[in-house]
Figure 1 (spheres, one colour):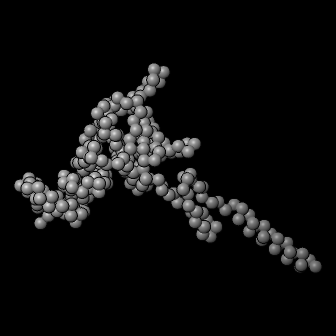
Figure 2 (cartoon, rainbow, N blue to C red; figure 1 turned 90 degrees about the vertical axis):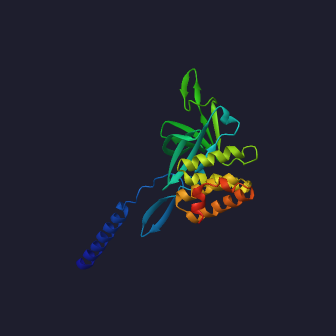
Figure 3 (cartoon, rainbow, N blue to C red; figure 1 turned 30 degrees about the vertical axis):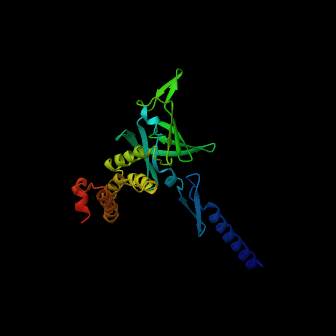
Length: 244
């Protein structure tokens, strides 16, 4: 009888120790808020942050062509290794760069520029309040006259704003923002395939990225269109050298 009692006691102690191990097993804290993916493996939790909105936010944001008369301001946003970076332009020059932080509040998406001020993002449009009032004075973009700046990512390219967008594509290429330049110039060519100057700008942007085959393809279209317009003598030497 004593042997049976001791056996039962040992079994109970072993079970209790096993349960305590389970209770004290710590799982990693879940961080990152939205878009968190869970993968279970041997009772452990692995967390993966999926920034699915970053590619959507990335791009070139421009004011409407008429608004630029009093506000030569525009923005590019890049996604690098799941982090966002912005560049502020004044006409064709970068005047400010920094880290962009995305957050949400009551369903609204906010973009924080270098922790200095915030814009609201919605459906490929960024709205920035440029200055305050008499009780709360501030100024975000001093060379703009508008109180609210509405910058659009995917505004339709038309004959009216074609030159405006082409200039922006050229400025991006000259600033070394080749991917953004390609994005804009490809849209121009898609809508206006006879826009000859866009092909040389596109070729230069691809060349800057080291994609020489793509560059050559764009250059060859440029050469073809320039030749058909009897302007072969105006083709830059670099284009001829890069298409050999």
